[in-house]
Image: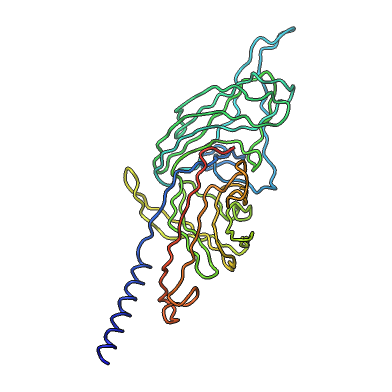
Length: 349
């Protein structure tokens, strides 16, 4: 009898140590290569320039506009030449940790204020690193300007940013006509496409009726706004959607992350949803609106999926979803590890 009791005691001790090790171990992270749209904003940042940020307004918020007055040498019978006109400078906030980025394109929504055939205007696109020029390209306008439409301009500029660095764009227009640009809006998403390892994911958990995700960003954004805009969603089978009003954004833990040229100390962000009742849970995350059907593979290939899709496996205790070891709190062992599937779009239309 004593041998049986000793065996049970040893078994409980082993299970306790296993539980302790599982909970105490620092989570592994994923750092996928993602493309974010850095939007031209109408608000100023800490550098004193207009902001360049992955943050979006809510879908119902109006766009910003700016009218650029074309400059030319006017004579009695003809216009002899055009002069470049400054449009604006947009600068990112300082980066939180070292990251190498590739700026692949500029999208800009604009319309001509004087004609519908202003198709020979030229944008001069200067990319800056800490306020200094690293590249400059001229790109012809891609439409006549009779209506508001998006012009897309391919770029190829690589920048190695270290903690505290900024990058930005200085934009100039050469045009016969006055032009109005539209920006800082979910629809009129004028800005730069920026490829890089911007986000560290430390994990996600689905336990009982609670789901959370933990991550850190090179350029933090307001995830309360993103929850309101449904840019991040918990979804499940049969069209289930968790209530974002029952989600909370909190500061997470401090981590030391390993980078190619050293390390960095960062603080994570945690988003937690409560009262989650669906099955087949997926967590979908973006910085703007996305097609929910495209994210679960049900839509055609032209629909826009979420930037990141995480398929979760529910954590279970030894006695079921809700119970811990022998029903005692504090002894639950997560035996199902969440599977993280990243869906990265290299080009966003």
